[in-house]
Image 1 (cartoon, rainbow, N blue to C red):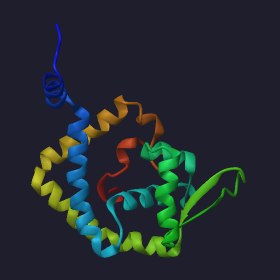
Image 2 (tube, rainbow, N blue to C red):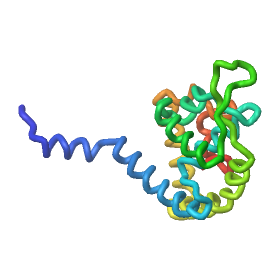
Image 3 (cartoon, rainbow, N blue to C red):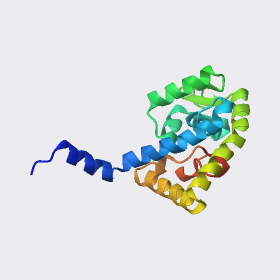
Length: 173
C-alpha cells in the first residue's frame, strides 16, 4: 500500500518524541534566556559554564564536556569559543596530561555565574509553577530516564555523579 507525504508527516508529527522534546526544550530555554538576559548570558552558556565549574579542580576536559553535554566536539568548541572571547572561560592544557585540553572558568566567569543564580532561580521557579511541582518533578524524572535509556547515563555529570544531577536543584540550569 502506498502512502502519501501528508499521511507520513501526520504519523511522524503525531508520534515524534524528537519534535516534542525539542519544542519543550525551546520553550523552557526561552524562559531561562529571558530571565538571564541582564547577565548577558544565555541558558545554554550557563549550562556549559556549570559543567566546567563542577569539574575536578574546576576544570573539564573537552572530551568530558562533550560527553556530559551530549555535544559534538566541533559544537562544543564553537560554544566555548564565545565564552572564551567574553573572558569567562580559559582553554588550556591539563596539569596532569599536557595532551588534554581543558576549560576553566576565569574569575570573571565565576562572578558572572554567581550573579546569574538569582535570575536562574526566578526562571526555574516560574517554570515549576507553570508546570506544577508534581509535573515538574515527573518531567525531570522522565528526562533523566530518557537520557539514561539513550545511553547518556554512562557519561555521568560534571562532578562525577549521575547524569540526572546535571540541572538538578540549584546546581543546574
